Length: 204
Image (cartoon, rainbow, N blue to C red; front, side, top):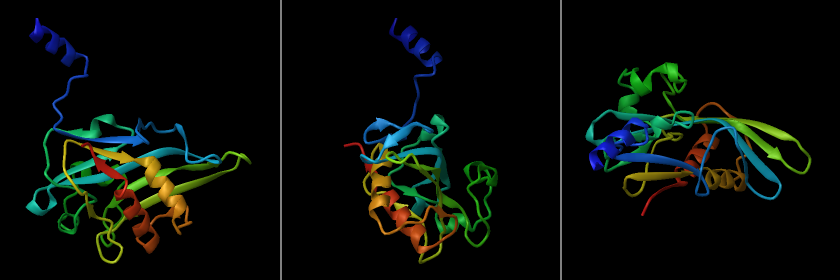
């Protein structure tokens, strides 16, 4: 009977063999695109597109690249356990001429030879609740060359890595960056990328 239960459970699509996963959340609640989330008493946020690259064990010379897409839940997990995870794609792989799988330009995460891949793409709008106005934003955070390289190793290890979007956007609002459209390497993109990577935490 237990084996029959496992077989039926697998058929429903709820049984997976993921060894490692990303949990995209909003202050602990499961995140969903195009939903409205409060940032504070007067400001809300709605995100329509959110993608970022994860590279597993980058210093070992492997090419374990994952494109985490908020619109594709299956991209939030993978079957291999990596001791080290990195946000973004390291320079060696960016200049290797590999353009397939997660790195296929069709995914909309590639700029050009001199700037490489976008590490994080986030598109949406900020809503001012008191006056009903909104501000569109589009962040393309990337580059692999100093001083604007958007590549960072996540501190710690584990099977579930939590990405807290509330923590990220609250940090953005509190920062000195007030640009709503960032589409190329810059000091502003590096600041927002560093705030993004600071929002990650492994389950304890």
